Amino acid sequence: MDVDGVFDASYQRVLESRVAGRDFFETFYDRFLSASDEVAETFRDTDMARQQAMLKASFYHLVSFYGASDADYYLRRVAISHNRYHRGIRPGLYALWLETLIATLREHDADCDAETELAWRLVMAPGIVYMVFHYDRETPVGQPDA
Ligand code: HEM
Image 1 (cartoon, rainbow, N blue to C red):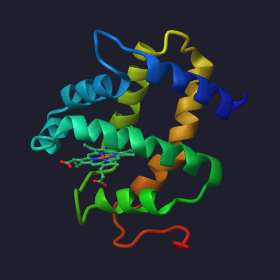
Image 2: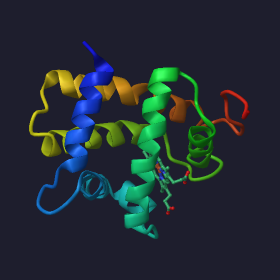
Image 3: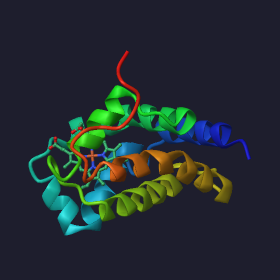
């Protein structure tokens, strides 16, 4: 399977989609916040419009990590900001994050099939592993900045 090709085509479709007047990232956070009280509490004081834009921006870095297996400066910073010494996002929440993302994908990509879902899971997996790996670490692992 051409994972990159399948993912890219699907990602384009979801970016152009609206379901019940909501774009992909709005639906994602609607679902994520209502999936767990713990998640809702974590985002209690967050400006969600800004948060949606941040997640959208970080997708580029997650996808590059899949291709390059090396975290850039941005992803290293996000991993550290989420660890136990900062935001304290426990590893178990990443499984919920991924399942929420996939549920949102199914809703927003009318052409989503099993191959599309697998492509998304494969593309997201290394970035999630990277984030979880840093839960207990105080310093990021990856290429030093040029
Ligand atoms: C691969 C998965 C994830 C990515 C790419 C991601 C990305 C981001 C980015 C880019 C930011 C803003 C910059 C920063 O604070 O570093 C952010 C903030 C945040 N993220 Fe995540 N995140 C992920 C998973 C999670 C999970 C599982 C949770 C659990 C609830 C979470 C909770 C938060 C919170 C609470 C903030 C701060 C919101 C605020 O500014 O009030 N994130 N995330």
